[in-house]
Length: 108
Image 1 (spheres, rainbow, N blue to C red):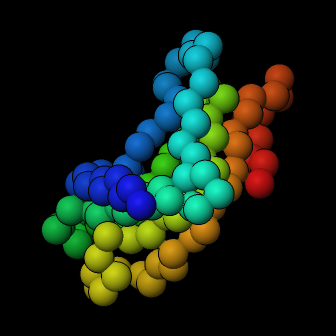
Image 2: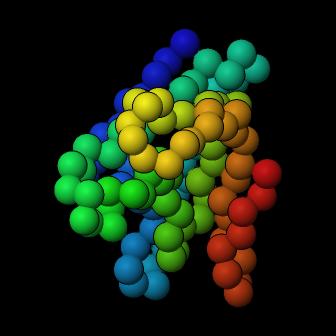
């Protein structure tokens, strides 16, 4: 079993994509295999309750230009279950993000 522990103050773990219209040509895949041996945890370390980022807990953000990314056979869960924020559930995850000519799509 492998756990990738992510922490940030912004409320976002990994952000794929960019602010301009240039798309990367490579592929990124996270695959836990048939045993689902890959777990991602995310902890929002922001302690300022008045900031919008305090309520945000987004382990993966696929923004504009994000394409050719895959998360398969993995689990995504909060690092701290009782953080005082909204309740979050562990998610058994398998998805592929691909780019179409009109918009980003999310396939499960």
